[in-house]
Length: 74
Image (tube, rainbow, N blue to C red; front, side, top):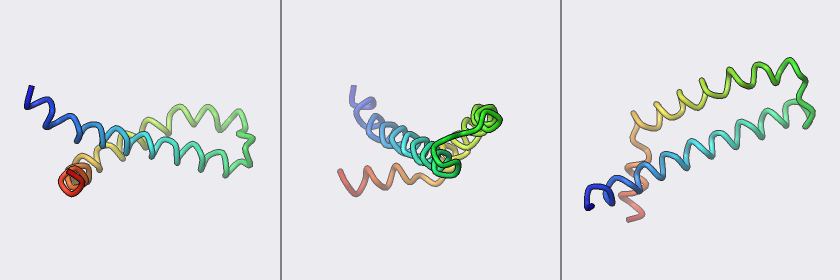
């Protein structure tokens, strides 16, 4: 039980970071096309976003940003 409590906040912050990256990517995509995304770009949307989110998740995990946030706020 203690192990779950210790690791849960770190993973929760990592998930929040990835979710915020997803939201910012969607907003950037919408702003780029003036809130009217063409059909050809919607097709690439499906392939680009998982790649970008995976690379952001790996970079967050390697750099350990989420660990520092838990340390200084806890």
